[in-house]
Length: 403
Ligand code: RFL
Ligand code: PHB
Image 1 (cartoon, rainbow, N blue to C red):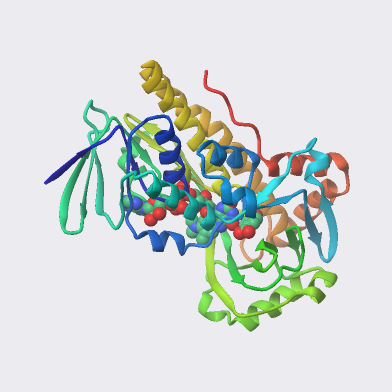
Image 2: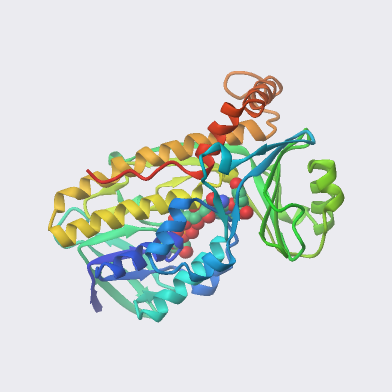
């Protein structure tokens, strides 16, 4: 068996693993990433598009911000349309100057991969049977197989950045973790197209026919989503059917501007709220989707991953620079406090903006629940204070300092 050694072993080369690896390397902390699939496969996943200021600052700190800063679009606000009537959430005014950046997760991932390769940092792609061992001992390690060879990776710490379906979370004994979960009765059907977007800012649309989101990646690339039943299948949706339905859910003036075209990508993502507590066990830290999932309605998934990465990189810096090993205990409580705020906001926005049908929800029939949510949304959208509550959480709550 081939044996490797590093300070921090990172499982997963998604945005969490790559960003953490880059920040650690800049602090002189040695790390190796082990990823189940190929780099091209990782780049084929089309996901988030909205970055909070905290995320942007972290990418700058990692020294990988050049393309993000030149190609990303600053968004000062977005619209929420309710049955065709638009309300503007002016992020900048309502938050005292804060904004978000529209720049795709795929592009951040591409930039981080290139920076990692340029710095000569080690990544083992297409590694199978990754397993975590001896997490509560002085000799934690990973084992995996790559290119037909068995490998053992010895380390001080392991960062589990391997997403919701990864192995890291499951390596914490079941009796020592609590999992909180809400699966929504619908999913989002997403479509990416090289067409000019309908608007310069995002439009979140609540309609009788269900939710829709008009997002974008650039002035020539659109990203749209439709609420569909959780049992729906992407095979049921031709591009024409998608555009047809989107037109019906957008406000009229946006529908008139809609430019359609062939899809570059089309897929259905289920909607889920999920938190695993605690986020640390011995030498293992769970980071990003490995520990928590939010429905995409609040644009928080990737941004919560970034705050975990920020907290963990500051903790590991203190461990190695000040020999303060006790500070690892701070990771889970600090990370979870921010995670629960993001979870609550995403759950709330999802309830406000989607149509529920069929099953009973919160002890009432879906039609009654929809009325309550419609009224709550109406209340928030029609006051500056209400819109400010939405705006402050959308731009992202502050990161907590170490104690
Ligand atoms: P990722 O991106 O899932 O990366 C995890 C990486 O770990 C690898 N892996 C393993 N590696 C080694 N051994 C194993 N056993 C492994 N198992 C898995 C995987 O191959 C992968 O490369 O998690 P990370 O880095 O924490 O990043 C989190 C974000 O990707 C995620 O929060 C967001 O993309 C969530 N999300 C969205 N967030 C938004 O803010 N806005 C969105 O529009 C949005 N759309 C989405 C999304 C998530 C989706 N998923 C998870 C299905 C759309 C989708 C479809
Ligand atoms: C996206 O552009 O993919 C996107 C933007 C905002 C969201 C969700 C997804 O809330």
